[in-house]
Length: 357
Image 1 (cartoon, rainbow, N blue to C red):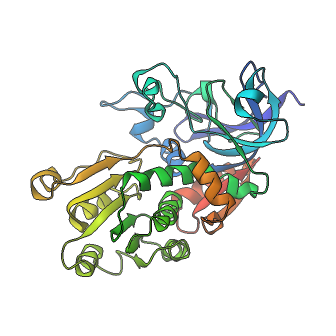
Image 2 (image 1 turned 120 degrees about the vertical axis):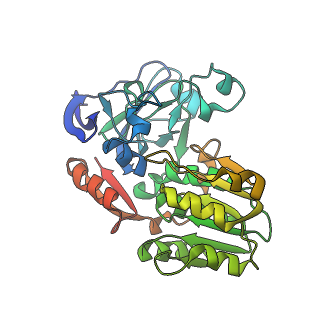
Image 3 (image 1 turned 30 degrees about the horizontal axis):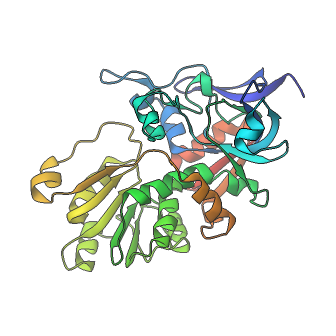
């Protein structure tokens, strides 16, 4: 094996560089994969463009530590196995494997009570150097990683969708969808489309996708949406109210990353409905909290990462209950990362963009 590899290294906002860096090696309990694909997430673009959530402001400390290799939507082939890792994860050389996005500390209050995805230390692949990301030729899974074997029959580009789909499934779980519910998913990007597909498996009475782009709404129909709404063409809130005799939807899942979708949801949802907030917002969002409390007594559920859902995501892709091929639109070699970033940032011609090292 060569001693160095190519990787996309984050140094600062708008300063990501294709560099030659040392190939990681597996120590005790660790695994190294040869990355076969890595998706570009909307959160990667928010980080790239300098969103305060990642780089800090007067209200928060910086989350990103530089220099760091970017990327958390990865999949790869196992090429090195440290002592004890094969037995722990039931893996061998040549297997396809993925690690969950967060590497828990296993010692904080949250990890000790089973809520590892809320780990106080909160090391996420691609944002801190201790867990360098997958926009590289090789990637190391630290000993504390949660690792899953992936069936070899799953095409690589679909296997790279496991991480975002696991997040989508968790968001749908947080919606507590019941039989007969009217469910709205706002945002038909990668995560929103995964939510549409996962919510379809919950069999709500009406499943609605809301987005501004016809191409994404078409994909939503293929993944199970009964109705699609483009707010540029109609009053989305009024259409949902008319559909529900003026009450509003039972469950609203926000996956646009835009403040207007939060306000839209508060007006669209019925009293005592469940509002799931998933998006990573670029800036803080201000809404009328009276609607949440005194007016509607809403159930507000946050959704973060994909805890305990990776096996489900792997199974649903493998058995074709969720066809993620409708979401994948573009692939680029690693050296064309800026073109990929720009495409995701513009968002008009693409849904899921992937880098292939």
